[in-house]
Length: 459
Image 1 (tube, rainbow, N blue to C red):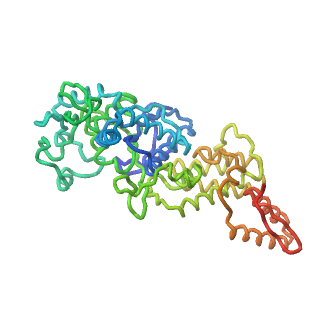
Image 2 (image 1 turned 90 degrees about the vertical axis):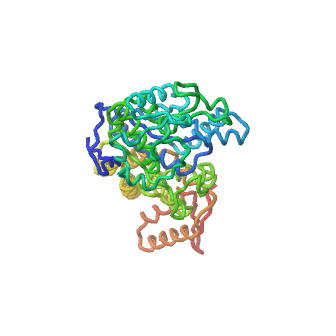
Image 3 (image 1 turned 90 degrees about the horizontal axis):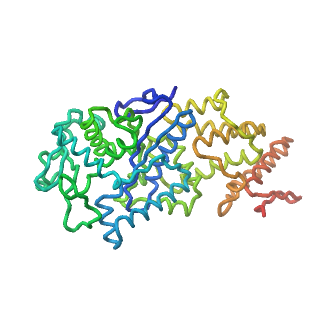
């Protein structure tokens, strides 16, 4: 197949073919679930939703695994603050996450493992690492990974051990033999609730964050799989540590491709809970419809930074209206399957096959919409809807979308009225009718009289 994907590990675009012909196995690091999801989380899940959709549109079977981290310092702290159990908190937040990302049309993964369900597999993996001399028991009761004993450490982030050592900040009393070492098993603390502790050969405690994903990916997809994904902030140390753990234990590559999406930024800073500059999905959906939010995210390339603002969302809404207006003018023909030899479909496919190039693919949709406006072709309208469906767009009722919202842009309407008047004066009555119909599709009725043309909202 012709698909090329940017591989963070090689820092290059590479031809993609699955390890098992016809079947792609993909693991994506999901949420640490202690609060509502924000737009940065939506961007990550949307990126891999598009990846999954395009792989399927390309005729491949996809086993998509996206985990949930449901045991963590922040989770424990939040549960204690609220006076509820960890399970009550995580169940509540998981349900909220499913509701919020479902509203955005993000398809669920095939498997959604919770970390607390895979503790035996984590303990087994830690045991393998200890047996190979890559893990050691610290004086404080933790079990740590010995980074310098793994020859390939730093290959994903592109950093040498000396570079990493230069930026280290590790307390003397943490029990590590080397500041670069990281925890595999955390010894239990007296103040932690019983549900945050497991008995193990290493003493009572709980798993470190990194070992969770190594164990869950191996258990659900095997020791080596096709794609490992996540946000760019996970490249180091989380994904680097996953490689050290998994490959240290098995001696096999963990993933063939490493794929990372870019950040969402607000005022040129990464959106994050720690910085307090985040907007929850629920907050945003109170102001904008879900498809506008989806379009706003999808029209940017997944590896690029995405700048969040109301102005960008307003622009996304207007752009999406242009596409829906084309579909409102003619009933689309049903498309049983996309003919990829069609010139528009071929351009769309070429864009998506080049590292999931959604900006170029969406440009094809606008070109196709312009042609639908001119020709009123049901076949082209059907193709527009089918291609957009590969991105999870334009599957709603056009009239309902166009009439939704709390108002109209007076200046834009008057500009269209003036354009229609100019078309009539030039005896281009087809264009005048097109403008009238396009405005009607947006819920705007024109009234002609001797005094001129006025408008009102359709009833």
